[in-house]
Image (cartoon, rainbow, N blue to C red; front, side, top):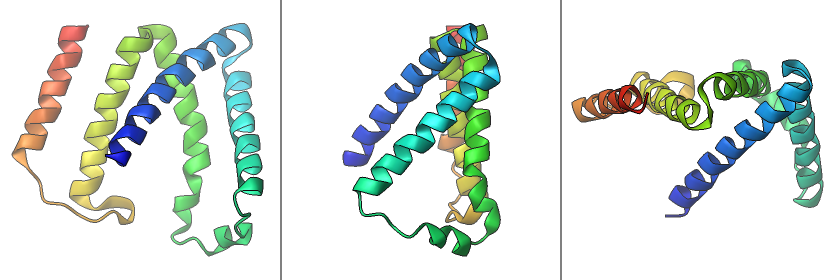
Length: 141
């Protein structure tokens, strides 16, 4: 149940962040806004790291495979794409498309066992669920 509540909070925060970032980018520029988001995220992480036990940062050097370390780069492009989509589609439609995309890609990662994730078997009902979600986007549109 805790994971479900955290996921709900995550979704709500992502929607609110997208709206706020879109507002900042309209008053500055896309990359200034995205940079600000990443900088403030970094500073927040530093503060929380400082007060939560200060784990050894050099452990990053031991991460394998090394491609696992590109999450921050992907994060910058996530911010960019969320802002662009919310600016053009509006918050509700953008969030709907983003979430459906996340579901489809996450399921593909599980089915194919990508990025070290444990491989799961393909299930038709999950594919049907994704198709229903896509139909939901079309109806919502």
